[in-house]
Image (cartoon, rainbow, N blue to C red; front, side, top):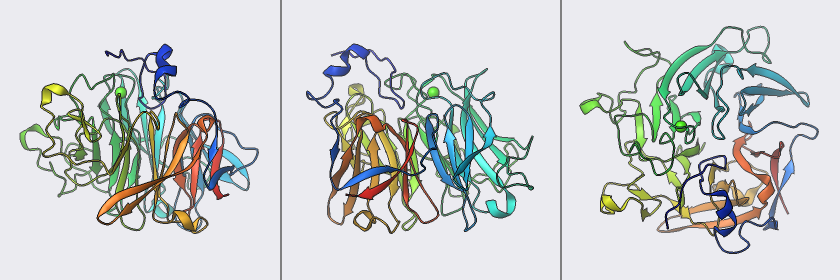
Length: 391
Ligand SMILES: [Ca+2]
């Protein structure tokens, strides 16, 4: 069946609206909630946000929690209140469902240098922007005026599939999750093309400048020398729309949720130089028949799920907190549309074990975050930030 693509959801699931009820087994998209040992609880009573897409702790012992709103605002939480920390709504193109201010990262040395980084879409021309700002030296609750410095910009051919994650790794480098540019089915073939930044995880050194750029290229990036026109910023590729990449704070593994096209959502552990298959493959399956369905040279996902379970993965975190002992060491992630939240446990020599924690379709899990104690939070498009509780 030919499926014409029409974007109705946040992160890249695309289908004709009238077919919505036909996707998946009967009842899959109903609003019946299920609880399997865990439930979300509002973390900050009386505090609401408009399309919160990121939750970040600024680091150290005296840091703060920051909430990113997709429209272009960042709030800092302090004494049970939220304070506007950064407002770049006038610089952000947030017209598309997947466009806007999409990610925030604090420099590992933020306490001393005050640098933080954002990932957003802008127009005229349509592009992704990675920019640095500075905290106001006179207040940890304010951004220093006129402190913006653009590090990297690249063009966006369509409004969807912008990725949006921006995270520092244990190596001190900045990792950026970039989608395939958009539309449906990767018409430009960006996923497999290392001459474009699209469809990739990038890795840059924000502590160095190079001749042409406001950042450096780590010497061991797989295409560091730019051989045959490959982009030296690329760390891994073959991604469709990595919606949330995060490091395991204990092992240093980089986990990604990569949103699928028609059939499969995937969870990947991102390795340097890895090719994650899109659009030759979707999850563990052939996607583009003319490619011959080869498997060689592609990194398989750690896990995948089909339309019976959901339609748009939201990548999360390997839980390293203490309040939920049953989840320690497990990767917690969600499906934005079906409202399922799962724990995925890797097992040596065996398939991972995937356990449902709860299913609440109205929760609309857009993102996860962790605080200074590695406790887990959910950014919900119902406007609240949630934490998890047993029971
Ligand atoms: Ca795009």
